[in-house]
Length: 355
Image 1 (cartoon, one colour):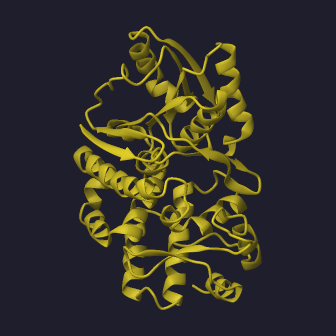
Image 2 (cartoon, rainbow, N blue to C red):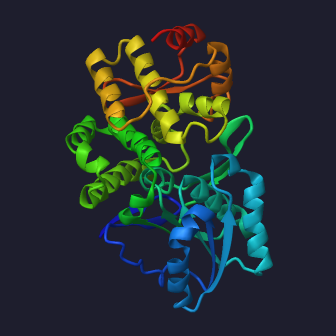
């Protein structure tokens, strides 16, 4: 078991990583009223064991099961969480447990941030993407028809409890999607991590638990450092959105869930890398290194066919936009990200019409 502490101005909390399917110690973390939020797919696998653990602590345990998928990351789903809390007469001292992937974690966190103006919640991520990214850092929210994660709040969890053992039930496509966010950390923070990923690719794909535990620990370490410096994304935290400006446009165009978030991020990172190369800041060798690594984990390296004008219009809803001006996270070499606000529409048209 490994424990990584994340410290932000609003809260310090542990990220606990195990790979032996060891039950977590909930006693110091939960209150007497606990709502487990999950979906049917995950609940079928892990809900009963979790209920038994919590009931042994003499907790009042309620369950809210939401539909499975990005398309259900909506206000209507969050309203179901509120309904469950109010039906049980849960108070401000209750605890929400997010048992699932990024969609469940984001919605549960948003409900926790807004119910009675803020209650505690714990992340129990069951997908690789959630374990390395979305469960850490306190970003919560829901989608809007015009943009991904446009409605939400910064609300840090009480703890993130990660069990690598649960990943064996994850479909291969979902596992690969999580690797996109892992590769992102190497692109923006440490090119040596990209080398480590390439060296251990076979063990990662075969889900060697010790290697996965190290991968998750290192990924969370990169994110924790950035979040500690910039909790509410006023500066360097934007680097974590490398590839995401393009990715969110892809997801909105294709319809949420048709391209997994990680798949869209992979294609978005390639576009951002090409734009960096177009500006003379990334070598062809570095670009090819990124593309080859993404391909090794069966991730897409080309976006779907979208008219350039429509692509640019959809990117206009990006949260990094300031005063109507698009900003992109680009690379000045692998491992060295920066924020650019001087990318012209002409440069984008060139990027989106060439391969």
